[in-house]
Length: 220
Image (cartoon, rainbow, N blue to C red; front, top):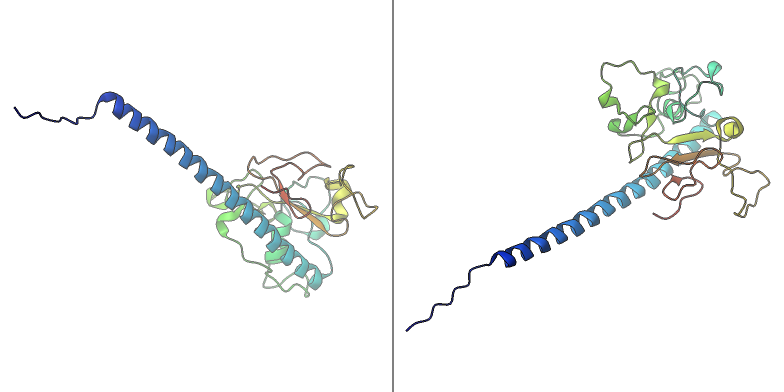
């Protein structure tokens, strides 16, 4: 009599295999998510460096750093600290089209821009909405900021505005070689709020563990 060897998969074995696949999928998704976040932090650091270079060249040509914040006007005569939102709208105008928003006839003859290229999809307003989402909506040039890889505007503050615009101060527990209480006391500060799109209020803006800036960037 010939004995047959049946190797049918039992329900328990099938459930075990499915559980293993689910665990592996969860691990793979977590690893992928972490790598995506790491790549965005690397991009933020690179973009901040690109902005630093462009701002420095702008300062060399024009003799001043771009205005802080964002607003509904591009006229330098009306730039003041009241009613100006955070962001990098005026920085974008200054670097890419001169402060009168006319690169063909710039406000200053010393302006030699545009000083950098930027992906159109990475321009947006204070709440992170991209220009591509605002078609048909009236948006003033000074309200359009550079967006970071996490989808929110870079915060830019000229050093002359630290007191009024809330520049980031050096914490008391950190050594300082300057009597000036602010990071980058004579230049400017650029801040990305990181993956959680949040940061501390002044004077601690940019010091959260997941923030990225041109003055203090913890490893992420």
